[in-house]
Amino acid sequence: PVLGTAGALRGFTVAVEKTLGQGNGGDFADEVDRVLGDPRSWAASGKFRLQRVPQNGESVFTVYLASAKTSEKMCAAGGLDTDGFTSCRLPGQVIINNERWQDAVPDYGAPLSTYRAYAVNHEVGHQLGHGHEACPGKGMAAPVMMQQTYGLKGCVANAWPYINGKRYTGAPIS
Image (cartoon, rainbow, N blue to C red; front, side):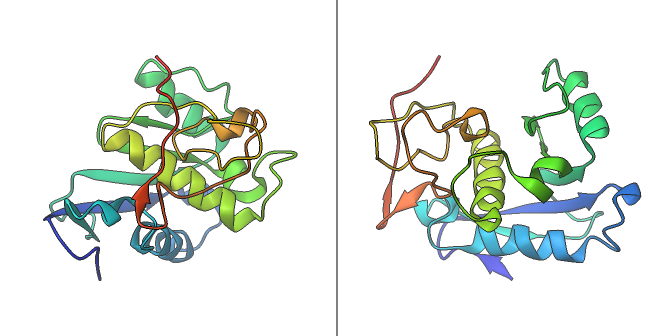
């Protein structure tokens, strides 16, 4: 399905590392569709729509689910050091660390489904040109572009770039 209601159509693909035992990757792909199709996700801007396309289709980026070891290698190829712990984004590649996908992080304080939506939205946010943001204040929702994997810094877990129909941000971190 096309995700979003307005703007240019951007295709994306989904790939799952074969050694993860995820079958054909359908469950992961369906979850990515669910997250990116949510009205609180990036397509809420109205500037673009998203659609998962086949591997040989015309796509702007690929969302990968990769083991910690593979994601570390993929991220390092682009100059990013994740220590096999975090997910990352390289041009055209949204790389989700399977250990985080399966277990989130200790003390996240929200259901696994929230962490998964955060991980997808955070890394896709980088693909869309957004940088990291800070917690706006104790007890407030964490911006999706905050590095929530490293702790919430007094904020409350949040998986969505749009809250109540408006883009929710924190101060940019350079």
